[in-house]
Image (cartoon, rainbow, N blue to C red):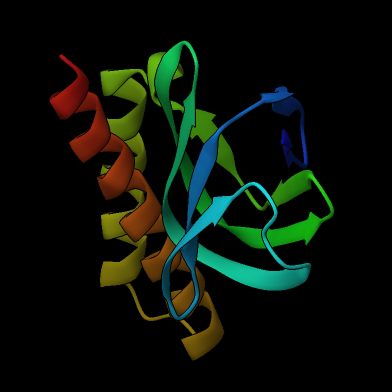
Length: 131
């Protein structure tokens, strides 16, 4: 099946895959060939792709997935391949988010920062596992 992963700034992946695992809002979902058509929201988490070359992992900060026929499209709020992660940038982003959360903020901003912090921590964890 054809998989496309697109963020607001770039296309991260396009190619044939055997399996895709996405972080659905209600839990991890596996998508195989001949999956039923669906649209779902995605949470912060890992997108795991399995194809003939092996496995590739992307870190996702929410978004949507659509399965239609033999095509899967992931529209990500933010996403990065674990191959592109940079440890210093991740550490800086975590520190900045933690500093902002320590100040007095409206609830909507706290929720946004908490989501961003989970995303950055997941990137750090994935970076450390990939070493």
